[in-house]
Amino acid sequence: MGFGIIAVLTGTAANAQNLDEGKSAAKLFADGCASCHHNARSLAKGRFRLTLFMFLQDHYVSNTSSAWALTSYLEDLDGTQRSRSRAAAPRPSPAAARMSESPIRPPASIPGR
Image (cartoon, rainbow, N blue to C red; front, side):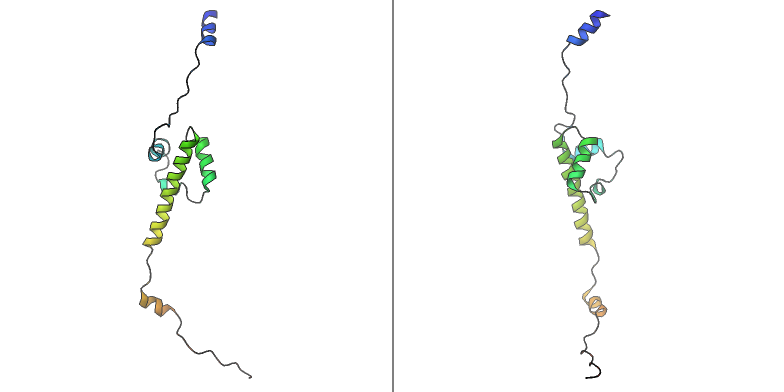
């Protein structure tokens, strides 16, 4: 037993391994987030970039570069969704826009002058 304790104490230190190294942001999302979050576009919605980065770094990735990459990926998806929804929003036809405006008429006279 004493020999086992000495072997453990004098043994070589374990090397840390970066599990996120070499993965793209999309791969990071697929490996760490997609099992619970099926829609990546809504994760960055309404969040500040720095708070999203800090949350991802604390809970989902193993280093800062992976956290920044995942943050940028999620914000890009969120921005794409916003621009698409604005572009896809129906716009009224020129005739409908003219009908909704009030007709032009001269100003009313001021009584008592």
